[in-house]
Figure 1 (tube, rainbow, N blue to C red):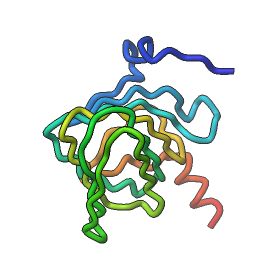
Figure 2 (cartoon, one colour; figure 1 turned 120 degrees about the vertical axis):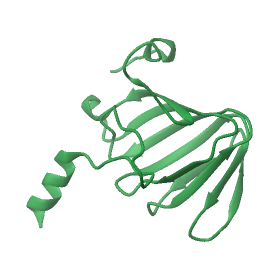
Figure 3 (cartoon, helix red, strand yellow; figure 1 turned 90 degrees about the vertical axis):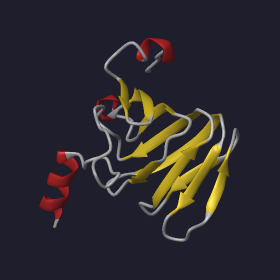
Length: 137
C-alpha cells in the first residue's frame, strides 16, 4: 500500500514546476502501478501547447476554468470543475486557463518524475520503454 500526503509531496523534488504549471507527482514509474498520478495546477493567463507523443493522459478538473482546443479539429471545449478530458490518440492541444486550474491527471506509461515539456510539447519517452520497443521489433 502507498499512502502519501499532497502537502508533503509539494515540499519534495516530486513537485515539478515549469512554464505555466506545477505538478505534484503522487505516483511515479518507480511505484510500480503501471501509470503515474499527478495533482497539477495550470496557471491563469498562460497558453499551454502540448502534444504527448509518448504518453496517453487523462485529466479531471477539480477547480478553476478555461478551455482546451483540439488542434486537429479546431474544437474548443470548456474546462470547469467536474470535466474530464482524455488524450486518447496523442492529441495535439492547447489549454488556456482563465483562472488557475487544479487537476488530477494520470499518464500511461507512467512518468519517471522529472519530465517537463520539450520543444514539441511532449514529455520525452522513457529510455527503458524505447529499449523494450526496439528489442521487440
